[in-house]
Image 1 (cartoon, helix red, strand yellow):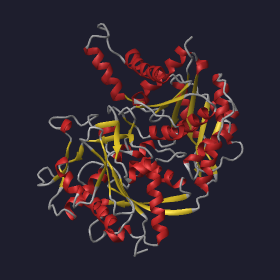
Image 2 (tube, one colour):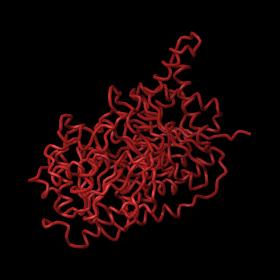
Image 3 (cartoon, rainbow, N blue to C red):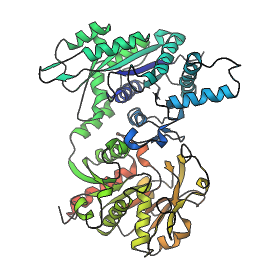
Image 4 (cartoon, rainbow, N blue to C red):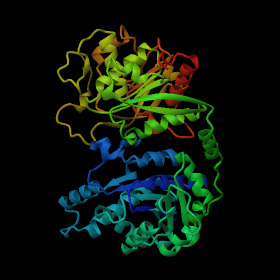
Length: 545
C-alpha cells in the first residue's frame, strides 16, 4: 500500500520578509524531532529559471544543493534546521514552470490542446510537488509559497495547491498562513487589520487557513490572539505567536511551547511521539551563554546586504557555538580596501574570511586582505574567490609576477594564475552551467586540512567556472609557499591550499558553508574560529587593538 504523504502549505501576507522560511524550517525541525521524515521545498513566483544569474542585491545568496541546483536562500534555512540534504525538486520558479510547459507544447505533448494556466501550468506545479514526494518518500512535505497573497505572479501556485488539497483529500493537507501584526508605538497596541485583510484575500482564492502564525516584534497583549481567531475563523489555539527573538535558533522552541507541532500532528492525523528536543535545547544554551568572544572580518563586495553571505555568516556562528564563543562579524567593503587602508580596516580583528563572488569589483581589496593576513600571521580563510585571490596575492608579492591575475578579471594578463576551466570555454550560457554541486576532493597526507576533516577524501559543493592554472603549480608550491593540499581525484584541479608557515591560512575552491549545521558546525569553520580564538588569546591580534 502506497504511503499517504501529508502536505503543509505555508503562505504569507501582507508584506514580504515575514519569516515564512524560518517558520517552515522550524516546523520541519519539530516534526523531525517527533520521528517523522520531512521534505521541504519553496515555490518562487519570479520568472527567472533560478536565482543563479540574479544579483545578490536582488536576491541574497544562491544556495547550492548536493545535486547542483542553484536555489533560493530559504533552502539554506531548511537544511540547517531540518538537517536534511535537499535537491533540485526543492525549489521551483515560475520561469521553470513556463519553460517546461512551453517545451512540452513544442514537442506536441498536449495533443493540440490550447495551453492554459489551468490545467497546464497548475498541472506542472502539482507534478513538481509529486516528484519531490516520489524522490524522498517523506511522511510530510512542507511547501512554502514565495511572495505574498495578492501578488499576481503567485496566483498559479496558489491555485495549484488549492487543487492538490482536493485531489489528495483535505484531511491530508494543512494551510499555515503567516501574517503581520504590527505594533503602533503611538497608541501602544498591536493592530490586526493587516492580518484580517490577508486572510480575506487568501479565502477569496479558495484556500481556508488552518493555522495562523502571528509575526510580531513585541509580545501580543491579551485578547489579540482571540481576536485574530475570531476574524480569521480558526480555533483560538491555532493562532500562534511568532515573536522576533535574538537568535533564529530559538524559534523552534518558541513554536513548540505554543503547541504548533502538536496542532499539526493532530490536524493531519500523524501518529508521532513527543519530540526529542534535547540536542536543540543544548544548542540554544550555547547560543545564549558563550564563554568567549571573537571578531572576524568578512571582506566582500556585497556587505551592504548581509543576506548575500547568509550561509557564510551562519557557518561562522556555528563554528563559534562549538568553541564556546560568540562570533562578531565585522563587515568590510572590499572596494574601500587599499594597501594604505587595510591595516586600519582590519585592526582588532582576530581572523579574516573572504567569501565567494564573481566579477572584478573589489578584487584589489580582497587581495590586500589576503596579503595583510599572510604578513601579520592573522588567521585567513578563503572560500572559492577567496582562495583565488590568495593565489593571486602569492603570485604578485612572493613570486614577483607583475600583473598576475585571474583571466576572469584581466583577460590579457601576462600571468593568468587563475584561468577558465576547459569545459567552460567557448559560448557557454551563464545560467546553470558552472561546476555545480558535490564533487570529491582528496586531501594531502600530513596537511592541516586533512587533520581538520579527519579523513582523506571529502565531497563538498561547488559553484565556479575558474580554477588554479596548472602551469603555475610548481612556482606556487615553491617560492609561493603554498601547499596544494586538496585536489580532484584525477589530480587536474586544485581544490584547496594552505600555508605551513602560518598559524591558519586556508583556501578552498568549494563552499563548505552550505553543509554547516548549528548543532554540527562544518569542521573547517570550527577550526578557523578556533584559530581566531588562539590568535586573540596570544595577544597578537593587532598592534592597533
